[in-house]
Image (cartoon, rainbow, N blue to C red; front, side, top):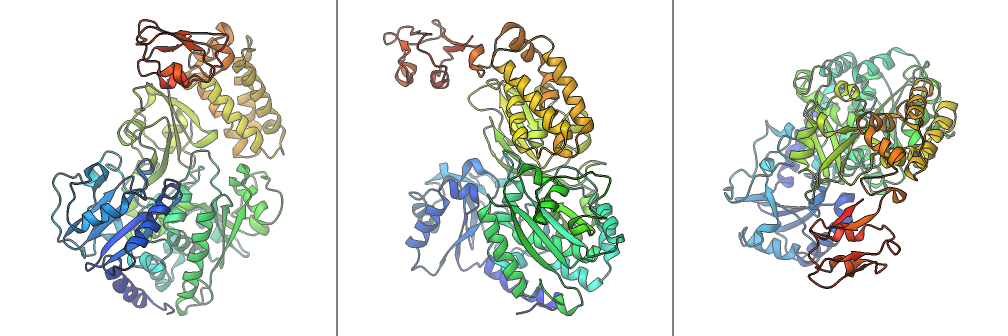
Length: 635
């Protein structure tokens, strides 16, 4: 069926809403994004399909990432007059028994596996739809998912459908009001009104730069030529996976956002530049484009109008610098991915020297919701200069690793200690880095700051695409700066001197400090180099590259000085600058460390203090991690 109008779309919406939440079936949604599959979700999916293949009353379905990656595989089960229950760690050996118990209405038997109940409807866009399965009685002894600290306080716009629909079925997206914003925009045929709504919503680019989206669209629309819509899905920050999760869990929302943008600026062609390392995202994008084309939502004369739009996929080779707009467009043209000077804006001369509008995945994912709900709705969230919500990936030394979406202005403390659960193993929090390898490291004393573009910039960091890496007491901040400079040295395109030579020289100094060869004046030289790189580099990679160095020097200067003057690494990371000792008063003689030592460097009788042979010790840290009594100490 070719969709020709809003009426056609609403007919499909009504039909598939009943299928999406069919009260006559038990529906089992298994999280099948990369995080779930890595944790064993594919095996669980296949086991459930095999066990219940003959039961027509049970639907085994796939879905995307619901965010709580630490608890994968995550499985949601729902049916008529029973609560929607989210289960965690539902591996192959557990899933069949849990489904059987759910069918028997025994929610207490495997209570440890239950993450929580789900309030339905959950999506922000569902509030005017009647809930087709609202008759169930809640289980009082099981918390609602929204009351669990990880989810409490989250507001999902870009991630609104992830974990709740099958990303390979366009009908399920349509059932959640998918493509309604686009078709309504076509009916109104007022591109300027679309731009006006996006401008008034306060939406800023979620890829890192934070440029106002509406202004970018408006500027691009003013220039003549074959205009292009480009989606930046080249997510290269270590530890960041927001865009990947959206593409894997809800690809159609990105396509719809691009369609609306194309309508607004007068473009007929869109490109999605996605990392080749995201095979599942690419697969689901290809399928989504095929389905949208079959329904007449992509292609020639969409909905019987004179508006045509096609979307092509281009896979990148993993160059971090191609996340920069001009380098991305050069790569898209088939050239080497190198940035160009910013005085010529891409909205004027971008891809193939034509006006080009580039936004990232998360930005486009926000657009359909804003068009449906209105500018005031979006502008009512966040802070005066940072409207709406932002998705973040929480990784590193944190209990609850995962993906969250929160209103701008929330404090770092709320994210790290409440949603993230703080640092595991009773260790002390040291810092959090925001904004990827070019972001800054923020210490504990600044954790009350709100997370928005301006506040993060004031403390020397950036919003970036949304990666957050948490560090504990065992993290050496000098080594952290060295690690990120090493990454950026490899990823620099080498086109301009300040970036190519400045980052390398900074890395050489940091490496010498970590190896115990630091000298007086190194800190000052790093600061001087950092200022030069920021001022004279050609693109954003270079101008932000010194952030890890400058912020660690500013907030953790004592660690640099200890490395240089005292030749000590108090975190036990730089091998030439520390050694392990056994605290005889704390040692219980449990022999765990002795059994695990690969070099037999630890000796001693059971229940008596042990000794560590420094000549044999290779400083691998196995004993330090294994000791439960804090008897292994760093000196």
